[in-house]
Image 1 (cartoon, one colour):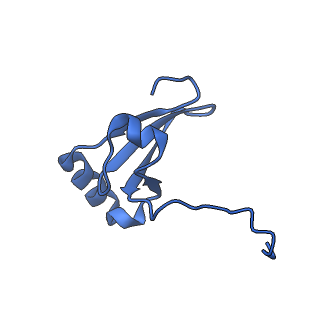
Image 2: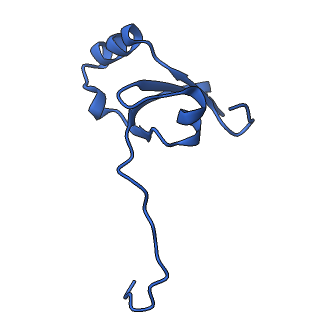
Length: 87
């Protein structure tokens, strides 16, 4: 996905993922999540269980790097126009 408002997304290799988790002494599920149905995840072919590195422009640090753990979405959320609803 190449758009100026979409930061660079890269799937980490298994080795890179392992090194990241060891460096911070964390488990993958302790990372922030990204759904496998996210348009950026789809564009790079990210699958559940992988870790994505996102490199964003930063006004103070030139670039900021963040990581997301790809998870499977639990299904679609649908909102019906039910007139009996109290919502």
